[in-house]
Image 1 (cartoon, rainbow, N blue to C red):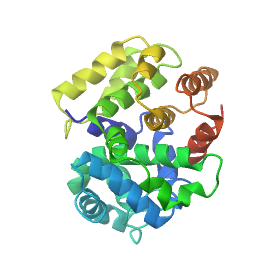
Image 2: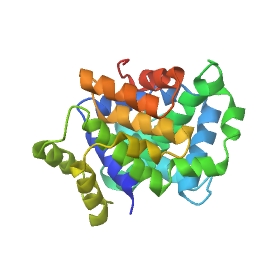
Image 3: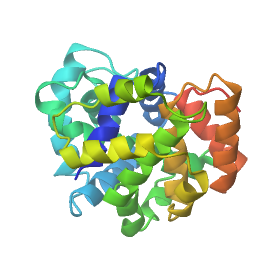
Image 4: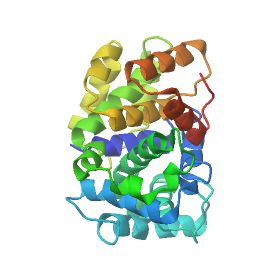
Length: 269
């Protein structure tokens, strides 16, 4: 099962009307694209290495994504980046925002999980110190096990639950809304088991305490909040109230929450 591909397709197609524009901001200069290049390479290398059995940024997972992204970034701009900025975040932006065809089809799951993980890391490292997000020692201090947790299958499932839970903030999802969400999930890279899990989550009543109880640490908590932000437009009182409850339940401090809102261009709650 690879629910990362489901997450990638939902973000790529836009789970909410503003999801794609928020994602573009997140990988642009006001988000991850504004991170120091060397630090970003280490961060993404660790995240992608965790997905691929320990491969690092100098080869393997990140190099593969860079290759699949070149054509996309060569023909269009994604997240404020161009074809001349293929390294690091450019590779992820190209694979996830480039349109989903050709060689990048198999890269969207890894790209989505790496972007969400990187948003969480940057938000947490930025609190209380405006320069900490550019401090490579902060990234290097993260244990490999923690990086692997950010992209683990269990975390993929948790993020799916978080996105769907956020979508239910205005009330239970109607059959029409369910069909719309399911229509964004193509067959490429998504198993029947993946699809059935999404259907089950869509049909299940909202359970915020149950969701939060499965969050293993602070970094995944920030990742859950980031995924939730990208899943909704945050344009109703119910959604703003849900996000406040979510942040409190996840024990996320105000600085981390504000940073995630700024990087994704989401309104404050």
